[in-house]
Amino acid sequence: MSTHTHLVTLDGDDPVGTFLHPLHTGFARWWNIAYGGLGPVFAERPKSIVMNGTERLAILVAYVHNNPGRAGVADDPADSDWTSHRAFIGQQARSTA
Image (cartoon, rainbow, N blue to C red; front, top):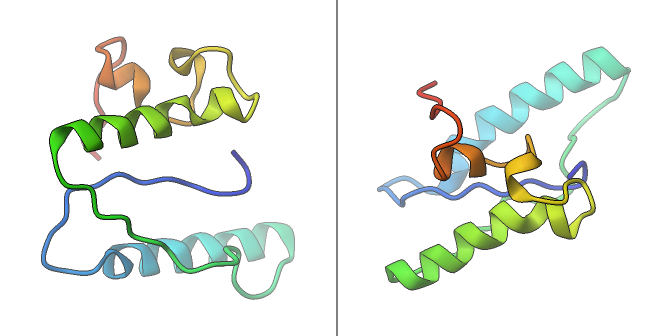
């Protein structure tokens, strides 16, 4: 999970980059100060995939929640801190931050 991130959101009027640019910039600033780096941390620009319909959305969410298992980070999605799966299945409170 150290090589990339996934974010599933509901689409709005603004492109995803409007939200992610300040997030990536702030993270890069912190990372570079903490670890002596210079420049961008993420190699590629964010990619948007439009999903129409609840069935396709369910497939996307399942993909994201099961990603730590495929990466060998966790045996079960509920054991991973890398996804919102525990909140999704009611085992943990949802974050409101």
